[in-house]
Amino acid sequence: MGKKGVTTEQIIMKLRGIEVLTGQGETVLGACRKVGISEQTFYRWRREYGGLKMDQAKRLKDLETENSRLKKLVADLSLDNAILREVSSGKF
Image (cartoon, rainbow, N blue to C red; front, top):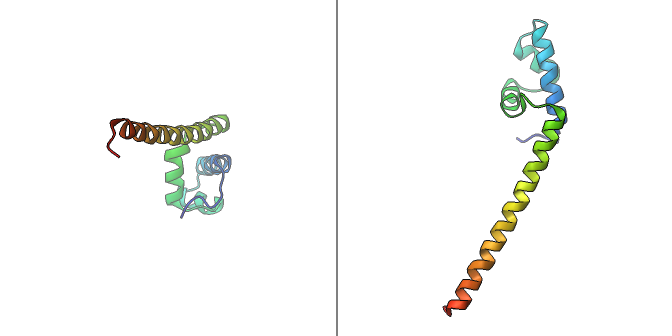
């Protein structure tokens, strides 16, 4: 279903809220209901964002964005390189 527009910062805040509630004796399922997410979403988010702080999450998002941009550049350059090799070999 996707994140439905939930930002990384909001995810981390909800995870921290669930940690507080479970520390007060609430069950994970009850804490998830109070925060407004499913238990499966909690475990998925905890696996991905569990140990991150806000600044680390922002840095992760920036790195993922830059990584995707660089992957596109490499793909474009590889395509250009293949085209140039084909043209220079005379097999067009």
